[in-house]
Length: 116
Image (cartoon, rainbow, N blue to C red; front, side):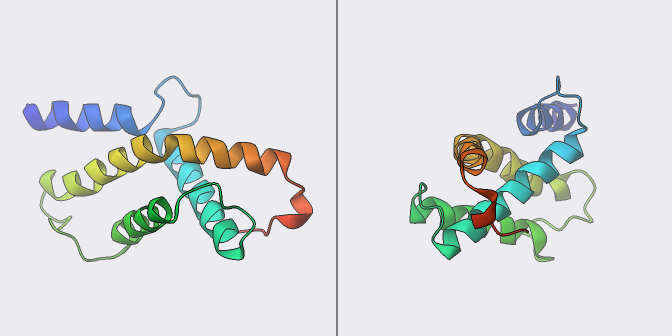
């Protein structure tokens, strides 16, 4: 029961339950925006984020996509907890940075922004 409550709490931190998009689509959009931000940062087009934050964000992304895990995903429920917890932290910690970057994208000429 406690695990179910923990999963529900983590899910509610990850997504906006009032949004019309699915939770998966919201997370996908967030991660795609973060990847565009990394690309713009590397190109030098966008620098309104600290290097430390950028490194932490990239490390989180790499952890989530690599097959190595602290707790293997094949262990039912608990195996996904580290990934879900890390994603919940990432969304919470980077939501302002993502919003700031999206505003920058809107106000920047699309000719200067590479496609991802």
